[in-house]
Image (cartoon, rainbow, N blue to C red):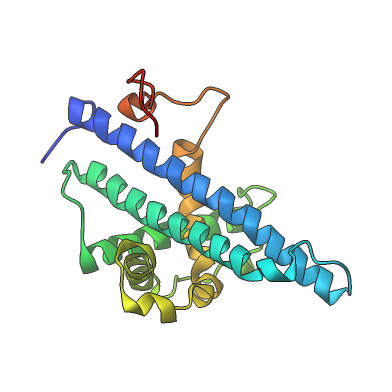
Length: 213
């Protein structure tokens, strides 16, 4: 369905986009929490100290960290496709290789902008050094992002048990995080008051006076 900026569909679509990005942000915060536990454990073991994770909970923390990062990947991917739908004014999302091509081009634009800002001296003080950012993104990144999203959380498949999310994180987290951070300024949670997301934030289990969950 086609729509125009400012019309009723566009307004509803923006509400859905805000919701999707807040889900992405929630997932990333959960990932940071569990990821820091993993890092603290590794540091403690390297220094001969006491690990913050009991040995019997190693698998549980890995499971929770995996799930949080999977949700982050999923919601970020869905948000980006939703943003494209708004950009082209059509609720029909890009799929397959078309989606990968857009994500690849968009990631490259962000990368080029970051490099230019560093070269011009206009980047933020906390920004990484230019050496952290190559001139081009990995050619396979967008398609790997799409395939991974489909297999680790989008669809139930036997392949999930053998796909290394750790390897994806090691190779591509830089680019995934760059996409996330680029969107966070506008779509992330800002201010003390939580946004009105219409029926999403009107949800209640108290409509009926009797009964149980």
